[in-house]
Length: 586
Ligand code: DGT
Ligand code: CA
Ligand code: CA
Image (cartoon, rainbow, N blue to C red; front, side):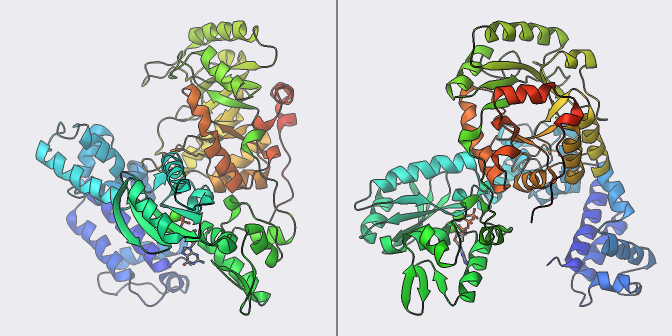
């Protein structure tokens, strides 16, 4: 349940923050802060008060003008002043105020001098010694900011899937060698393939728990032991995440795996189902009275409550239990279903390896095609391709294709979308390519309406086939741009344009919920590695993880098509590429 009072207070605080950064009159700033503090503890729901027509005027610290704004925020979620302030500076600027030692003046200075917008960016700049060069900052201040930030960010650190999987794989190796260890499985958010992982929950089946725990404490690269007992241990790995180990007997393995895979919300819903059948379910098994009726395997646990096994990626209590009960769980897309990649870089652009090397790597993976999509030339980049560069690359691609009979390289480009939604290459140049990937790399701070308009226009361009990393987010660094995703998804469907799920573990953009929206609305998704080197194709598994979390099936992902099917799609006029809106799924 949202708490309207708190949301209203947050909006008032944001107004105060932004006014302060702008250098507004301190009395005005304080009025908004006071109003936020006054609204927070009100017993009456501000929203209901506003709807009933009662204003807050006359309450301590609140005059007519403020009462009006509060009513506006309470009923609409925002107000004209806040919208105006958000237009004037980036969405993330208020984040900087959370950096210890940065008041409004200095936050503004860092934003303007170095374009720093998030605590993570400030930390990087401090480590690189760039902050001391800004007027009003010196080296001691820079160190102070760095230390405070490093501590704060470490405390709330979540790990991207690539980092988490390195530690997970290392732990599986370590624990598999423990005396008597049989099965070793990483459960928790990692198994559900959540886009970021807080800690690793690892299950080991073994008869002798203490031997496994002791092996972990002796062998793993442990920074700190937080707790340990005969069948469990919690440790923090050096430079890595916390690991929660549980040793369980074989008879409980399935039940423990269900429990520690989660999510918590899924577990709670599952327990409710069990209760309705007169059963008790916990990490040791499924029980009728005192008698254990299931627990050795996951299948036995789900079967006991009348369900098929639900894939871990779906276990978020987002309708999967009902779908399972009605036998309409989706047949989820798998890594092996991919037949190609539509967003590949080479050293003619900003990639690290040659066209031939990237094509060879894709072919070795069993792919039937790749689309080369090096960036179009833009002022901020030293290595973009202009019309002449693209023509040279096209000739090289034609030569390379002549050497294959089971593989095709498509001539593409990653074309920059300008502020107003136009593209930075001419229609002539774009029309000569097999596939145009369009992408935004700047002005992430446009307001929602303008950003949406910008993308809708690019999606509607007749040459564009793929919209790359649609929200521009970078985990821990850049929040998604403000966007009406539903409009974007519908436009993509209607134009037969494909939305990318960039599989880079720091992007994973589209995210799982946007994938679900694509499926529900009938838009196709392209799961791409955005590879800058041959090894980058390995990250497709993270993209597929998000696609599965978004309930996508093979038919929802365009690069599961064969080369012949893809070529037909590319040749078809827009109306025939377009998919119909499907009947809404639950
Ligand atoms: P994380 O580590 O923040 O990325 O997310 P998880 O999902 O791995 O959460 P974690 O490590 O706190 O717990 C692992 C699993 O254990 C979680 O997915 C479900 C289960 N679990 C934890 N606490 C509870 C609880 O209070 N009730 C129930 N039913 N399950 C829980
Ligand atoms: Ca966890
Ligand atoms: Ca845990």
